[in-house]
Length: 442
Image (tube, rainbow, N blue to C red; front, side):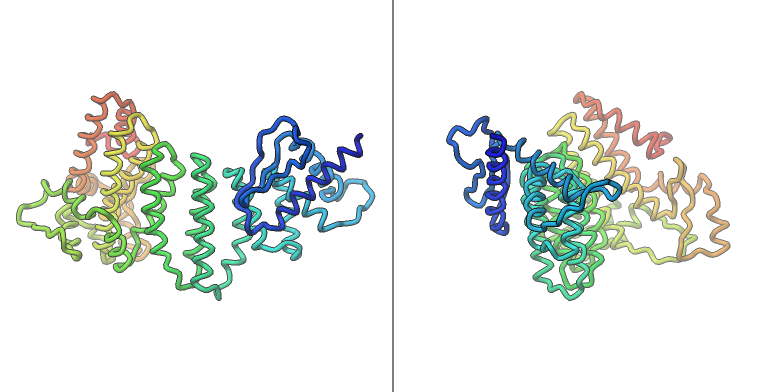
């Protein structure tokens, strides 16, 4: 009777491997709930490029494969045991079944790494296998880590064509989308996405990374508006915001043309009441006077540093941050009592304050504003001047029109949310006072 069970398990392993030979066509794998084998047939299911295994046999198959792997192929060096002949084909079958059922065993993924380095497994086929694992376990960090390990040597090839890189990027983005859709708050999928874009920045190729960042920015903006408690995506959204601020003029024009609104118009709706009447802004003009607006808003720059201020880059960062702030206003009003939205608001305001501090040559350290030492203009006399900060320097920040506009906007918003019963409004006010160090101005 025991021999019949073992033979049946071996048949299941064989059937699974037969389906996996069509790996490039497989789309998903899952365990199908079924208590008993009523029809007395193979529990391996294959339909429309999807592989399934009936649940009643999972425990028996998994324990059989796992035990053999540990006893024969994962023997510790100090373990006294007779040497067992190595069978590559057998090992691959056992690894496939075991990892499909329980992919969170790093030792088995390391075994696949060893076999890949020995050319016993193909990298392309392994990418397909990892995708199949993630179709059932979308939060499997080991599978994402394995994909990064497989992709690293591929992306190191500087001779890769733009088409090949584009195909790899599309595959990874598609897998991340599916994983995020299947499992909310999927940190691993968004982290994998971040790794991919950071890795592309180090490559020497003609791949249009800015266009990819524009796509990712729009996707993250849409995702966060539909999943207001998914902070993993908000973190990725913040990553995209920081990267698009360094766009070239051409890429920035593409970003602006891809938006349904005018960034300058969003900004002016908030700051225009505080601008001088003689300063007239043409909202349809693509070359609006960034330097004039910055000077009106901040009215002062660091006199010690000899570096040229890039007003265009500075203003673009303000534009995109205010656009995010307005979106956050709407989401917080519509989705009440969502802490993630308030955390994202903290990020936006922190970045806005950093813009001001950078403009005035200051940096916040241990809760206090101090002079920022410029690494480019680091002269001895400058170093002495930057040793300490006097009240005169901080007053430039707090008396600027831009700071007053931001602070007034936040005060009004906090009072509005507080009157609506949102307890996070009080916490947000405390954050501004004691973390951002604005207790003396709020």
